[in-house]
Image (cartoon, rainbow, N blue to C red):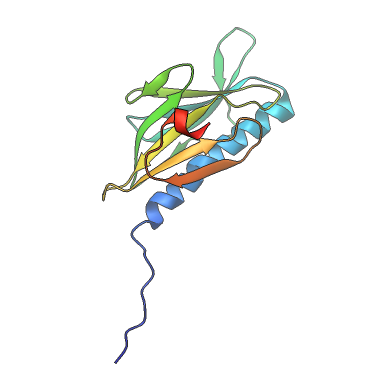
Length: 142
């Protein structure tokens, strides 16, 4: 008797959350270009949430009410690596996007309960976000 092969469902949660995080980065870039504003993606490592804000007239960043807060579940944001701040493993990691659509070189690392790691790599000049298996460093991906 042969048993049917079962799909690998163990990595589905981490991949789903990686796509959710990638969509936040894509939306932030699209809004930065279309509204011609400086935007940033705020990654709250302690709470596992991502939000989007733009540079306001008073010289501060204002939360964009059109983009809702995104919470990642069943996965932990390990760290955010940017050229400006280096590796941020607690608190908030910030990824800046210019009005012309240039995204700061950055990586977001995710990990699930079983220790599987994924790396999100936003493109510097397009809205594409690559999702790679494993923990990659910023210097090895540019």
